[in-house]
Image (cartoon, helix red, strand yellow):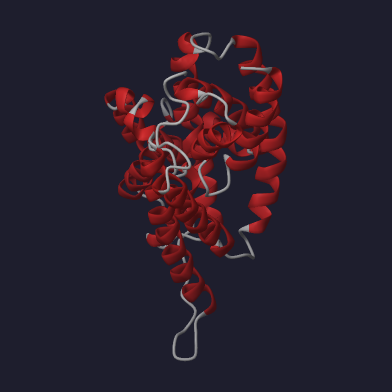
Length: 290
């Protein structure tokens, strides 16, 4: 991998990680359309550490408060009813599904899940799911001619059951094309949470999963055509761009619909099907060289 490739892929990672369009799919597709080798799951997981560092800084006050309260709740019974302490436990609970499935499906993640046909399917299907969830949220928020405005749930309403459902939604992002934020936000909206609450928990929930995944994949960073230098460079690029994107996205979701992302996902999925179906692009393009 050249330094230019690592710069572009780091830029793509930073731009797409927090948007509901799948960063892993876009890293894969960027390499395919540029004629590069597939950067692989290890490169993707490690560069995601950069974007998660952006989350740590952006939500630093929330994270410090949650971690502090959680640790105090281990010895102070009165703290166990504190919302921040409970959030600490709920992040742990929600991280269980992706931890178990990530280890169990490692071979599939590095192989069959990177098939472009599967990516096309997940882009379209999860795009439609996001569209439905967004529409239901908008209906509750605005009401209608014969419908009153319905109050949606905040993070104070988050339960262990809902945390696990969020967790299983996040685990779906092990398949490129699903999108970690897209799946968890869709799940949250379908469960009745506000856009802001679903997005905030989605980003907090991703921290332990992404950091653990990146650390696990560190041993494979120097294998194949991807070396340490370009990988670290791409991670720094992803951090810088990712911080700007998350700040914009958190403001965007408070007043805007997810429909632009829905349309983009569906059109990209259809285009990918056409390219593969006409043999313009191989569904396994770049894999053998990786």
